[in-house]
Length: 299
Image (cartoon, rainbow, N blue to C red):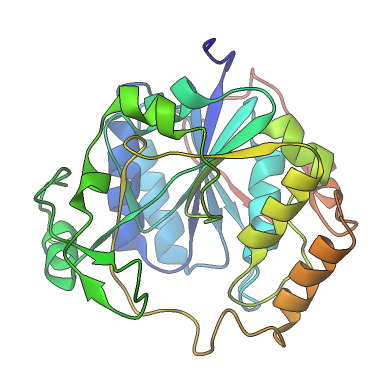
């Protein structure tokens, strides 16, 4: 299988008012075996203390760090992700949630598996409450068989247990074999060619509130002829445990976001009319721009 032709890569980190987790996520990206060419923080309305944190981190961050922010008007993740995509300077984009800590080979693994005609779906390792507290307190991230994490029972998805630890192992040779499988959509660890995101016009901004924006864009990407490839045994990332931001069943078919999701599937939709193109003109893609200090770019 030929190597990917990725010339440059942006890691796009989404966040909202959890600066402690964001700091750990950015620290993990600063220690990558293959550094990204830039990091864009997609901020859905965090308080000023997040911007202050980023200004401090940028002083020693090894690559350009940008802060794309919009006012807090409820959960508008689709819109801020589109603005971050519009701001990205690279031909490949890795999307990571700001409560995720990347393995040192995370970026390298995504790029090793990137191929034209497909996008990559990674997984997450959900750390226990105790392990999350240890990491927030300054402990070093731990990967591998003995990581302190929860694993969902495949037969009873309402039950947490401590099995399936083989998914915490990094085995790049096996990852290349497993990448032929399709996987399950999950926006916390996914990567795309930027031109493919432009083709489907990014996320559907009619989706307000928690849930389904990742499922919906997945459908349109596949409707466009792209293949979703699952990453297992590579591109590992720890997910810091926290209370769900949703007080309802995200799979409820009566939710407005899910109605949009089902419509995209039923009508074989490829391009959203409410997406990325609204923001492309707001960001000048000039490689000569000095991005070493984050500049808050507001909606």
